[in-house]
Image (tube, rainbow, N blue to C red):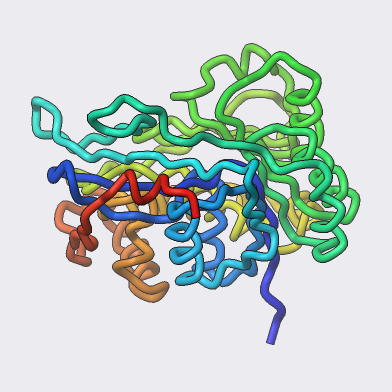
Length: 342
């Protein structure tokens, strides 16, 4: 049996509280861009090692319970007094035209108190991580810190594919280092609008700009010119929630292009790169049929997902999905309990 590919990742891991309708009930999941991508890759058959620095609180327990469901390795999840466990409210609602929308909230409902935010891992922890897991097929990060860059340097030297997914552009030396280290850079046009202006020349081997429901743009060093190439998206007429589509897209790209590390990526043809991008788009579209950033995982198995993807490929205008859109569990949400220190 072939050994499972390995992804080590650090960045935003959070407790997602998905709420739709009832202001006192919701669904809790491990979330954040890094948390979602690591969990999806585990679901797709990878061995995954998220790196996080959480605090000793009930919200951390909720994250760990969910990670356990998907066999995510927890060796590098540090729980410390000086850590922080981010909590994000993911609220689904209908706009005035009855279109399904979502927004992210960062304050306790009713009180206005800020929920805990992200804290980077410490440089002192990187030696222990590298001693236990010196090699990986892919290293993923979405937040820039000295510790994350130290890990990226080490994994790049070992042949890992470095996947960087920034949420913003920063004018500092650390961000420049991250750009220089990355083999794949993926970002959302909704968050970063000036990447092409800041970087008119190709920086990484593959760069991907997602355009939400409008598709994506990409450019690669396989091309002679710097022009971005457009790939259209599937136009679903009915969705349950569009959150998480970008994370599924990232996981799909990693799954298709990252199994043989940086060397494998560079050996990929433009056709293989486009196939990987389209696979990521299809996964993102399929997840839009479910509530939550990873709702697809809780309602389907890989066989059902592949069947759904094939149906979407055959008929991009599919109106009624072949898999029933189910509500996940609803449970009472107590912010006092989630924020309580153990």
